[in-house]
Length: 608
Image (cartoon, rainbow, N blue to C red; front, top):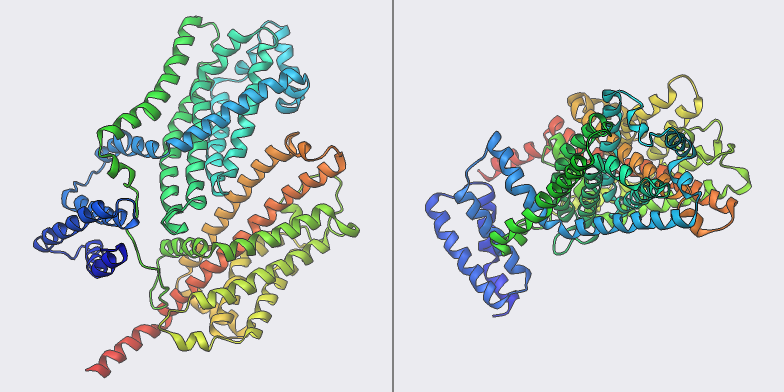
């Protein structure tokens, strides 16, 4: 039997079984009967379709049922212990290739830092800064090369280091959302920096004392950075290689696995910062004790994060281990305007729509951002900046008084992204059964005018330059987007949309504030992550100089990359806000009018 015939013959049974199982509607006798049928079908698929997706699908269903039959909920300390004993190690086993890549990149860049320092005596100053190099040279001259670890009290050392290291770990992880490139960028810089730092002392004949001091805490600290890099690569893998899943499903799985790893990294970073603040300063501890401590730290990382996961995976059923995160097949999701979403559901549906239509929204975000960044960096006719340095951040981007043409650029970018997104979403958010509304979509003119007025009002508030206008514009922005959505979906003019939007928000202002705040925070994280990575890679005397020998051109490239991350972050926020606000509109409208509920009741009455 062909695979297509086998699927066609059994798909109704499988989908019915899956839906009932997820809804917990099966009685025990029927569950046992269907389990036998599913396992029979799985055995058949394993025999005749060994390398086909139908086998993975049936294996996923059988595993769901097996877990349901044999589940024993773990709560409290039992769940906590299970996470560290089984769940995290198996996650590390799945991420083993990402971890290997992270480790090799770090080691290669560590060696690159060493070799470059050997060839260029000024490279250490470029990477570590002149102030740090001068201070360390003074400490060496005083006979205490490791005095930097004793310059502050224990607590004053511990807390800033903990904050900085956690920031690096989480930025390394979240940078993986940029197709894993962001994580690699941060790994490259940290590898080079550690290599330069270590060679700085080797060059001065201080290898052994520097090794014992630096790696007392560095064994855990650097391991945490490498693990964070692996977590970031795991996060980005779902976007780059979705496999047989949808891109959103793959990203959801990779995000869950990466999040588990970064949560495990947090206590290691905490311990490393504690050691650096309270123990590293004691350079009078016998060398043998410190060396053994370093070996034990490395041994712990290797045994728990690499050796134990491999051993645990070998003891388990390797096929089930390999497919433990395989998603059960789900038919394409159709948006239902009659459903009232919770705040969390709006957030998850927003990301589902973003990744399901990534080609459209990706172009809508990247191309305008690239054009804006190019214009700002190239600065034709001196239109876009009246400043001398290479600083570009959100303050500069929204400083329309100093840069009026930048305000015009953002105005039309806002207008274009908002208008095209709403036209696209009008088609996507109409269910297949509601054919009339799809054919009779609202005229474009009112949408065009409303989106332009929303963008113009946002720009004008910032341009007015009264106290707190920038903050007011940012707070008002989600409401302006909501008004534009109301205008599109209700076919109202801008003035009518304001009143209608205010009435809907009044029904559930908490949902509106939650969605607006959540996506503002996400865009801020993206902005901070991109800013850190791009400044690290392109501004701080790094790869940009490999692109050109001309200082003016290098400055423009650096400026362009910093501008790009600002525009990308803002345009991503616009797209996320428009998607989430569209979903929120349908939710609030149904809660306010109960239009679909009333229609269903009338239909029931007619049928009776």
